[in-house]
Image (cartoon, rainbow, N blue to C red; front, side):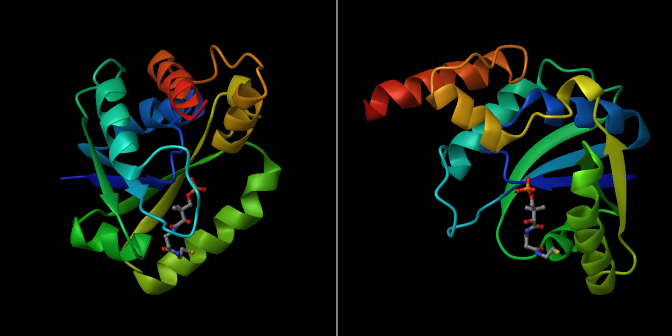
Length: 165
Ligand code: PNS
């Protein structure tokens, strides 16, 4: 059983994240998209909202027979991966600028759990500038983000905006 976790904040999930999941799916039997519950951050969506959104979106993506599940976690990624008996941590790399941060995390996670390997996927270059932070910023300032985030995420962002207006 080749099980991986794909940890992140996913506030919100972008098409870049989906691209990484679709690329990783053929290599694993199961991928658990693991949403970090980080009380220090001031997220746009609650963890429950993010998990529900991702669950719905994953139903309509290419998964190559790989089981795609979604869960939330608190604390260390490496501990969560071990508790779920995952052998790999999936992360996406967009550009060289991601490398140092990702390298530090991968080495720290390896130090914590030597049996668990971090596997990097290069997102399609069309998403090389797409980040959750940038998507929120552009959206909140009235810019177009279609094609960069799933339609459901955009609809939920619209609803959030209306809620807080
Ligand atoms: O999508 P993000 O916000 O870049 O994801 C970062 C994440 C959640 C993978 C990272 O912050 C993380 O693993 N946090 C959990 C705490 C932890 O394990 N820290 C040590 C890893 S170096």
